[in-house]
Image 1 (cartoon, rainbow, N blue to C red):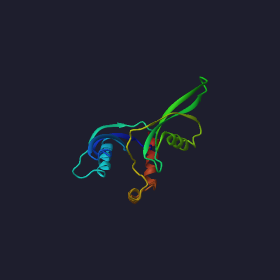
Image 2: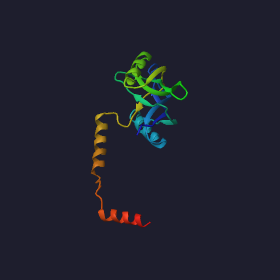
Image 3: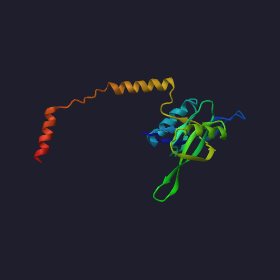
Image 4: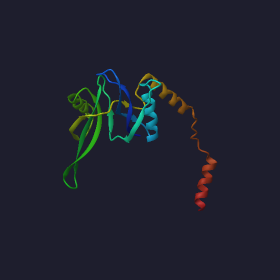
Length: 186
């Protein structure tokens, strides 16, 4: 199952580095969720880690993001939107057809974002071009499982719970025979 990413615009008080004062900012964040309701819940939970108890956030907008894939890279602090055009040859019409997809790639500048996009696409079998890369306003990305130790513990607990439910795949021969016989009578 592929991830559905929701872009959540959050209004909150943030320390302005230039002036040293708290200013109200509206910034977009990305969360991995299965519905708008879960996206709202997840962004509220994730943002609470950055705020004191007295501070509040206001979610001003939630929309499904159009990213095919999200690729974080170590030692990078900004997110870039890479448009990748997959090139396919249409044998019926004899023309090349391009299909665009958008990747969110973490990098420090546009050149590094281009290089990281090339790294991401290295195992692609078909031809492609990268017609555009632009800096994204996305401040941070919150996936379900980031690979952190805490996340791994949650994943292990989930797996243990899932494995604790008995699965009975034994076939009841008498019931199967009754099903077969009733199917033949009709």
